[in-house]
Length: 435
Ligand code: NAD
Image (cartoon, rainbow, N blue to C red; front, top):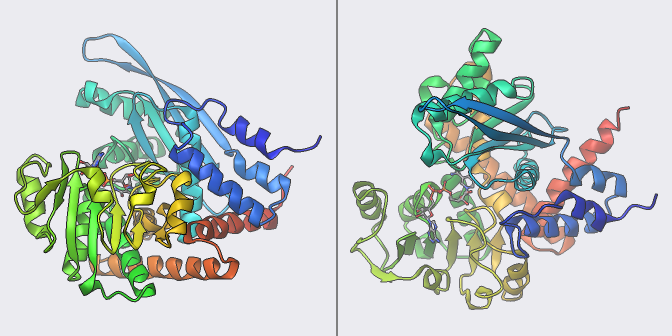
C-alpha cells in the first residue's frame, strides 16, 4: 500500500488535546521533524518507525485517599525510541495531560539525547492528577503504585525516569525505593534527579542553566562579541533562568532584564543578579517588588535591544505576533519550545542566531546521564568534574551542530534536527528490523 507521510503524522497526533493548536510546541516539533526527514530523504520505513513510539503504556492507579475513598488515576509511560540505549525522560503530574502530549514529549527526548551524544533513547511519563489537591501521603501512594505498575518497563538498562513538571527529588526517591524493594537490592540507577544522599549527582540542579550559558558563550564567540561586553535579557527566573543569569553575571556580562510571572525588571546599567536571587529567595520565590530595576512587562522584555535573549519560562513566547519586534542578535532557548515554528522564518530573515531547545537546554539530561554513570560505577564525582565534563559535552555538541549548519546551509535548529534524526536513523538501519 502506498505510504503517506501526512497520514502517519495525523495518526500520530490524532487527538490534539487542549495545547495542540497550530502554534503549539509539539506541532512545531513535528514541522521541524518533517523538514529534517525531507532533507535527509529519509525512506518511508524509517520515517514511519520514527513517527511512532516503540511502546505506549496506560495504567490504572487506584489509591486509598485520606478520607478512606478510592480514587483511580491514569498513568502513562511512552517510550519513543530505545535503539541507542535505555530510554530516558521525565515524569509529569498534571490534571490535563494527554497520551498525545506525552508521545510528542517522548520523541523530543529522543532528539535531545541524540544531539548531545548521550547514549539514551527518548521517553516521557505522566500521571493525570492535580498534585496540589493531594496530601503528601496520597502523592507517595500514587507514585509507588505508578512505579509498581511499570516495574517491568523501568530499569537501569531499560527505561530511566527523571523529574518533570510537578515532580521533584522526593518523588524520584519514592520511585527508586519502590523499584529497589521489588528488586530486593538498592537500584539507584533506575531514576535520575534523586537527592544527593540517594545517589544523586552534584551539579544536577544547576546543569540546565550552566549548559545554556556554555552555549551563550559559544554563540557570542561566533558573532565576535566578548562576554564582558554583552547585554543579556532573560525571561523566567526559576531554575534555568536564574542560574543562567547568575553565571552570565559572573562572566561580566550586563544582565539588563529579568522576569518572572510577576512581570519584567529592567536596568540599562545591569542588574545585580546576586541581589535579585537573594530578594527572590526571601520573597517566597517571587521578584514582585524588586527595586534594583524598573518594572516592564514580559512582552517588553522579549523585545528589548540586547545581544542575547534567553527565554527560560514557558513555551510559545515568541510567535508570529511578536517575532518581527525581536531585536536580540542571539536567542538561546532555555525553555522547551519558546519559539513557534511560524516565528522561526521571521527570526531567520532578521539574521538572528537561534540556539534551539534540543541543544540549548540539554545540559539537564547530560548531567542526568552523569548521575546514571556514577550510580552504576558506585563512584561519585566532584562538582568541578561534573561541570567540566558538562561544559565539554555542550561545547562539542554546539561545534558539531554548527558544522552541520554550514554543511547544509541551514539554520542551527534545522541542523540539530538533521543531526539527531540522521543519527537515530543510521542506528535503526545498522540494527535492522527484527521479526
Ligand atoms: P521553574 O518553574 O523553576 O521556573 C519558571 C520561571 O518562569 C519562574 O520564574 C516563573 O515565575 C516564570 N514564568 C512563568 N510564566 C511566565 C511568564 N508568562 N512570563 C515570564 N516568566 C514566567 O522552571 P524551570 O525548571 O526553570 O524550567 C523553565 C523552562 O525550562 C521550562 O520550559 C522547562 O521545561 C525547561 N527546561 C527545564 C529543565 C530543568 O532542568 N529545570 C531542563 C530542560 C528544560
